[in-house]
Length: 453
Ligand code: AMP
Ligand code: GLY
Image 1 (cartoon, rainbow, N blue to C red):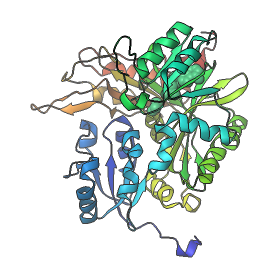
Image 2 (image 1 turned 120 degrees about the vertical axis):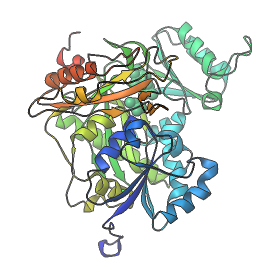
Image 3 (image 1 turned 180 degrees about the vertical axis):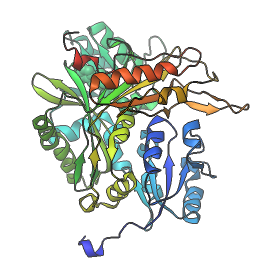
Image 4 (image 1 turned 180 degrees about the horizontal axis):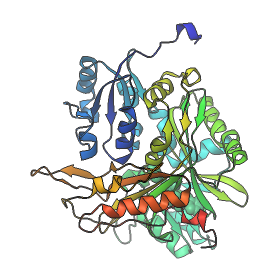
């Protein structure tokens, strides 16, 4: 569109934020700093931190309620809907909620398939020559099991659909691989169903890559792209990267793993060809494109795409973001990233974020334990430093106490001059927050500071 015919951002924008966890608290905290924010409406299911800074939407937020939610958005003159989590994006809510006068930050259903259908994403990557783990796609059990048996060198078995981060199994032996296929696709001999329902009807079996992992997130407005500083997430539950995978135990940003040359290469060889590959299919991507990468000896390779901000990556990213997040999200949704006047900058300090979890996570946990020490955590910051406490799985009980309500409970990004200082501050701050059974990893970022370990 020529610039003179493009809609310009209104002076004030009312926002509806969908999703109620740590990622959304970080987004809401940054949105609140925009002078152009009108009302900030939040998901009725939001955590206690979000409830302190937004107004819960009075309509239920669900697919069957879309018609009423749209009418409510009209009535409240919502100018921008921001969708945080993957499930509503995969379900097409961005298509449902966009109108002539209302923008949605987050891709439509067709583009969100990049995350919701790993087999399809693999095909898009192949056709666009994007470096990724070699993989095969299976829709039937028998050939999948035969192939799994042949993988002497190990492999990774993935449910193609959304499985809340649990559908990826790293297998060191053929026996483990067969077990993983049976778990995801079901096993008629044992009369078991697949663990992830229809999300496991198709699987991808791919080569087991070695190296450090890195998350590169980019704002994409359909044409232009703005690559954010690289982050490193820590998915395994235990210090030293041991134990089962979680949604993410902590992340820091920027990571020294990526040189500027490597970031240019990732933009040129990974992000841009993927967006072009989608465009060839007639699909426009608007929102955040998140590439989960393995830095192998043969260069960066894509492990997965997500179509949203990562959680917890969003927390350190928002802690460092400089500029007006509302303008940035609006411009992305409007296809106008190129017109951003204030620009997007980053705090020169490093942000290290730790996540306090409930005992038992990522397995079963108990809820309702009182949380204390949040102010003491924030007060740990010295001159030139900052600690921000974001809620993840929390709620307010009937005695008005903030209590635990999930596996990941509180995220604490700390800003300091370098990674070592940020890690130390984040650990000291997190240690001030208490609830029954709380635990967190103290080694977020240690692998790059101490590469031998
Ligand atoms: P994903 O949800 O696809 O990112 O996978 C979750 C985690 O599984 C990743 O963060 C990696 O730690 C691991 N993983 C996924 N694919 C591979 C692969 N091809 N090689 C090694 N590890 C992998
Ligand atoms: N931190 C990983 C994710 O959001 O998928």
